[in-house]
Amino acid sequence: MPHYDYRCIGCGHEFELFQNMSATPETDCPECKDSSLQRLIGSGGGLLFKGSGFYETDYKKSSEACAQKNDCPDGGG
Image (cartoon, rainbow, N blue to C red; front, side, top):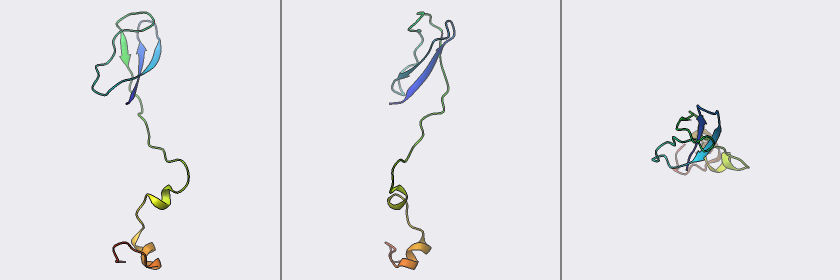
């Protein structure tokens, strides 16, 4: 579920809220109760690979590299 950043135009209160993408944007500030919330444009979440082994197991071997080792899965190379 994505998170969205909000800022109240009236009091300047900022917070983040986890909600479904199909949910309607919030309009009421939890601090001042004014209906002047603005949903901010964020950079979004990135995909991070942490740990070892991703480059070895998650990517297809190049045809030149597997041809040199004679271990191409399709037998070509």
